[in-house]
Each structure stands twice: as structure tokens, then as C-alpha cells.
Image (cartoon, rainbow over all chains, first blue to last red; front, side, top):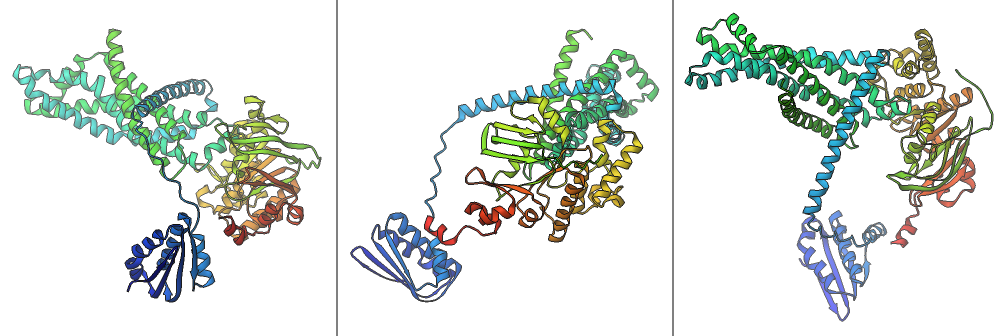
Length: 367
Length: 263
């Protein structure tokens, strides 16, 4: 049933009958709105007096007609609506929504802006870690200023609690490396050199690196989430207005805790990695004593200390990045999650890049 | 720790003040003074800049221009030194309480004193207990904040805000999220604390029952006008304030017909 429409010069009358329910509205929408549009600046009369029932969608249709006519500069009259319905329909004529401007292609400026932002972030991170290191030195000189309870809690979480997973991963990586390397070394009849390679690879490199990656995943993310939540619930603001420095209060105990536990953890991880490397050697009838003796002969104290030093540097960087991400948390429901993700990704990227730099540095120094 | 000074010394003075973010003013032309011992309310509809003004007053947001003197230190020209001085003379209760989740209620209250280092352990504990007694929470002193109801957390936060003998206590939306009875109880507590301790209270709220219960004087901010609309006691403003302010205090939305005519 189509609406009864009568058009005379400059005047259109749209008469609607029966029920204006959802189905009917869909049937007549285009027809009716099209006719209202066709009326241009003329006058339109909508006669709703013969309608039995108007649904919510029906009122939307009436509102659309009214909006179409008014925007086109025409006049409109609604007949047969109750006062409540009429006032609701009248509200529908607001202002024309602004047409969104076409986004111009900003590829080049976007690239530039991103580059500057990344550089700014980098500079800011380096500054933050530097400040954290200064606060650390201050805390060591004045131990009373330290939050001991936080320090011990984080040491437990990042040290003892991380031990099983770190040692397990490191052991498996040691096993894989030894297992994959033996056929290659066999070609040169040098499979008995496996302990030498394991000593170098695990103790100088992989032990500290695996420990640092676990640290980024467990503690870096936890720092960002804890401090980020405190930021969102205004606890960081509360510290500030109490005159307590949030950096010293929240960052120092956390960074100090991981700076103490990570080098220790890395020693355990290296040992587990070396042990893992022994497993494939069992097939070659190499005893554990002999294997360990060979590993021991391949490295010296400097190699060992290099690994421990790396673990310390990684810990300060990951702790610093995690805390900074937390303190930079924005507002909104996804903010803490975003901070946590940033802490983990930035932490892992930073330590791998830094590892490359340290390798170059140690080489240049002849260590 | 408590003083009952009833002098009429000015503790807060805002003159031609503009506040906002990143140097862009959200509010301009703010002028008011708060006398010592007053309960002063910053009121206005949602989005009118109440919280922004409060953030500037509690040193979390540098003012854009004008004068903002808190306990004699100007936050516009005074730099870092003034900021540190002001932080020593204020206490803040944040909207959700912002209690430190890892510390008990007592430890939360004691924390500022520990860092200040003026008192012995025993003194700090009994001071913190007395503060908690003032907000009826002394029997819950060893609970963690998560074990307290929202209203209790806010009361604990008031005790913490008052811990370092601040001259001014700021309360951010104390009624938010409280049922009417708890909210009324909180208002009575604020009045009691203000009268008994002689401290100045600055309260940000849009809850009309609270405003009429606690406020000695208030400033009403207008979101659309981006400035203050009126200043005075709530009763005065309800009777003879500007139309917008009277409407706000009488809880009348903008006239339906005038809105229709405007479109």
C-alpha cells in the first residue's frame, strides 16, 4: 500500500494511512523521502491523521521527511500527530552535520613526524634511564630513603619466582644448540669442541639474553601494569601532591631489585644452558665431569664477568623502560594494556640492540 | 597537630586566572579568594572545568596566566620553589580515594609522616590512629584498602590528606559513587572536621545537597561561557544569582521551549 501523494504547483501533500510499523516504513521510505526531496523549496504537508499506529521507526521516517524539506529550504506542515509525537519529530531538525573534510595524503609528513616522535621517545627513554641510575646511586648512599618492602617484594618476584622458567628455557636452548651443532662439527671431526662453543655462546651471550627476555616479559610488563594502574587511579598524583617524588618512590626500588637479581639469575641460567648442552653429548659417551672441564677450560673469568655485566645492564634498561611506560600511561580503558605491551616490546628490542652494541664495544676494547 | 585558628587570613587568591592544558585556556577570568577556615565549593555542570581548576590549585597543572596564590605562594610566577611550598601546605583527597593498594589503611595515613621524618615510630602510629578516629575508621586501621567500601576508602583518603597538618584540604567529587546516605554522612563529616580543626576545605562537587550542606561560599563555573558565573553563599546565589546559576542550584534543565526556538 503506497502512500497517497498529491502534487500541485509548489505544494505536495503526503497522506499516510493504516499502520506505520517497521515493515511498512521500509517499503515506503525511499518513495516518500524522494517525493519530499523533489518538492525542493516548495511546501510539503504530511497528513498523518489516518494513521492508526506510529512505531518508533515511523517517527524516524517523519523526522527524515521534515529534515529533508527544511534543509532544502522548503516549508513543512505535519497534521494529525499528537503533541508529544510532533515535538519529538521537530527535534530532528538540528543543524546540518559538517561534511568531513577529505583527508589529504600526508604520507611524507607522517613519515617525518613518526621519525621525530621515535627519536624523541628514544632520547626521553635514555634520559629516564639515566635519571633512574642517578636515583639508584642516591638510594645506595642513603639506604634509609629506600622503600625496603617494595625492594624485597620485587626481588622475590623477579628473582626466585623467575628461576624455574628461566633455567628451563636456558637449558632447552643449550640442548638445541649443542644438538644442531654436532653434525656440522662432525664434518670436520671436531664434535669434541662442542663444550668450547657452548661455553662461549651460553655464558657470554645466551644466558644473559634469555634471562633478560624473561625479565622483560615478567617484570618489565608487571612494572608497567602496576605503575600504569596507579597512574589511572591517581595514586601517582597522590604521591606528587604529598611531596613525594614518584620516580624515586616507585622506580628506584623496582630497578634496584632487578639490578640485583638479574645478574644472579643469569648465572643460574648460564649453568642450566651449559647443562642442557651436555645432554646430546651423552650419546658420544662424554662424562659430565669431562664436559664441564672442557667448558671451564674454554672460558676465563673475563668471559664470565662479561655475561654478568651484560645481565646487569639489561636489567637496568628493562626495569627503566617498564617503569617509564607505566608512568607515561594515558587515560582510557586500553591505556594500561598499551603501556604493558610497549614495555615488553621496547624492552626486548632495546636489549637485543644493546647486546649488539656491547659486543662491538667489548671487541673494540679487546675484552 | 590540630589548630583551631579562626582568623580571616586569605589562603587562596585567584586573580584574572586562566587555567587549561598545554597553554590553551579552558577557563579564563577566574577571580575569587578563600579565607582561612572556610568550606569553599567549586561547582558547576559536567565539563565546566571544575577539575581543571582544582588540578591547577593542587600543582598538577601549571596555570596559563594571571595570579594563583596558595598560602602566599604564587603558582604562576613562583616556579618550582612555589610548587614545593604549596605541596607542603595542602592535602588532597582524590575522587576514588587513590589509597596505595599495597599498604594498609594505617600505613597509607602514616606514609607522608614517614617520609617527612619528624616523628618517631610510636608517635606516627598514634597520630595516624587519631586521624583515622576522626573519620571513624580506627577499628579498620589494619585492613587493606581493597577490603573497605567506597565510602570508607574516601574517608581514609581524607585522613591521609590531613596527615601532614595541611592548611588547606582539597576534596575532589566526594559524593561521586556514594549512595545518598553515605554521601550525607560524608558531608556531615566534612562540616565537623572543618569546624573542629579550623582547616580550610576546598570541595569540587556538583551534588546540590552536598553544596547546600557544606558550603560557606562557592564559585559556580560555566562550561559554555568558559569562566566563572557567580560567587557567594549557595543560599544567596539561589535567591539572587544570575539566571544560569539559579537554574543550576534549583536543578532546572534549560527551558525546553527556548531550546526549540534556538534550533
